[in-house]
Image (cartoon, rainbow, N blue to C red; front, side, top):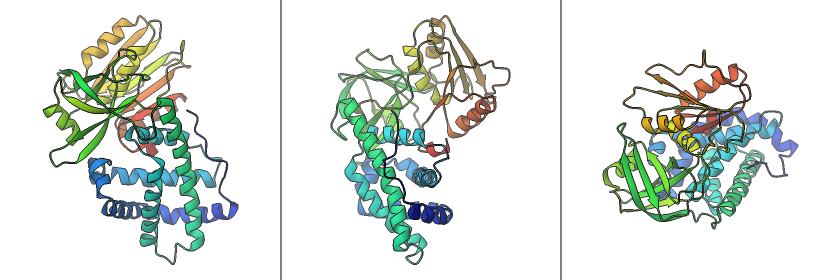
Length: 378
């Protein structure tokens, strides 16, 4: 999906104010976002229990993600010569759609975010002119996301926010690595390779928490199979309590990894549970695809879905597999086709380190997937 900002840009006076105040806002952004979430959850406690990831909130990851996303967008608005944050917005839009976010929630965020800005910076600093300029930044970004999410819901054939479906677990496989494969049937299962679903579970304290998991089966099977690394409260609940025959809430699939182009060589690079979108891509590749698969893990024993990865590579005559255990994945000595499309997934540090290696080699067609809210890092 092409991401564009609304036609209404910042007025020159607004741009001047944003340019002047961006360093101050940036220096206080952590305090602003902490105050924002405190106010938001105090006014709407159900959001923390039933929508936001409590683990990310406790670690501060969600706060940093919101802050950095707005700052990145504001920086682009005042300096359009900088790279457009289209990929950042696309990833946020797909994640929002997968959580069922709707347009009426943006004014709630606005109310508490701007109250936090005034609280942290002071009313003397946040004059009416400063507030008006930052208000404009917020609503340009918000409207961009609202329009994108509306289009995603339309493409999925659902009403805005109506993404959850109840399906029955038809299969569960416990991989030797500890990863769990869950198959859900009875749902419309149209999706693109590399996409994900959100799964909602009710935990012992009554909170309904949501997590996103990559699909690892081939499209067109009539089922959804996702992989769960049992870390965190939702994944741990799935490990301990979800069995064949149980009902589970799963969304229609979303995710903005582009589909591989016919005839274009691929390089799939992953670490740890980042292997999962790569398996989804491998499942759907035509037999004549040229593909290099590179994977890093702590050890053979912790390598998720290792045998499935090897089987899928062996089915493709023009595919190769290279593995790194214990050592950091290095592209030194690895020949990459000049016209290759690269797909990259793993933890934040891995993705950034490998992407830096790719950029240093002049590889620019790189598609990244992160399993954290830190999309701004890219």
